[in-house]
Image (cartoon, rainbow over all chains, first blue to last red; front, side):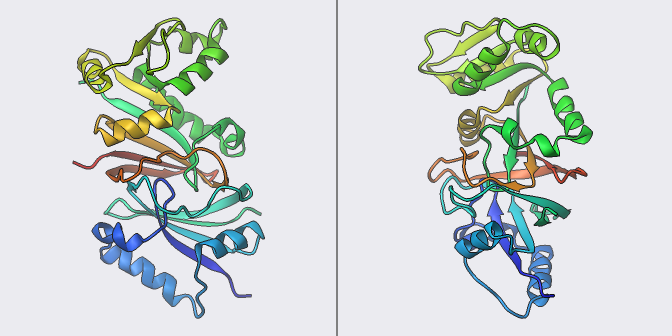
Length: 110
Length: 179
């Protein structure tokens, strides 16, 4: 069965909007490899923050991969806007990059 | 110099409000040890008004383990609306808050811990007065509740100094200000 995997750049305050504006200082070879690995594991891409939330709420998202950046933005769209459900997840693994970015991989809680 | 160290429970969507409602299922010995170690490095607390009032209501006038500790610990509450801080061993900080906090850091003692108080944590981060931020990231998306940080145009870069994943899926991340 194919999996639906969502990968997002995210800040410590949960902002995902316009990562090209804030992730360059952290985008090194290690990060590039992580992104490439994720892209090469896929043959179809779905886009949209709202879609990720919908799939998560419906129990249709198999994996959520977050690249957590060591910064607070204070403004910008969040990955999850208020009003959704409480969705428990299961941590599959975490990797710390030298830039301070932490790669977190979650699956739905069984 | 004493450091100000804030510890917060946070969800994957950045929510820090009412952790007692959503941390329970993930609170194992490892999480307890991490929290205990953070508390042991402090001998005073710095709190925002909302958290202060919540703690005062929960522990004031009570006795025994946690209540004794909370009542006996020197507490500093930052507020422009409180007229006085009446919970025992409490000191009100208002006026030139930044200057008062710098003075506090120059006094002898262990670290000054912060619990909850997310608005104050955000303010201290923006004013470069927070020395350490420990986040215990819980594997849950909440969808509602107050977030850690909501200062417009308040970008704050940090340096990751520690990360550890616990078996319950909680990740303990330690940050210091990026200088």
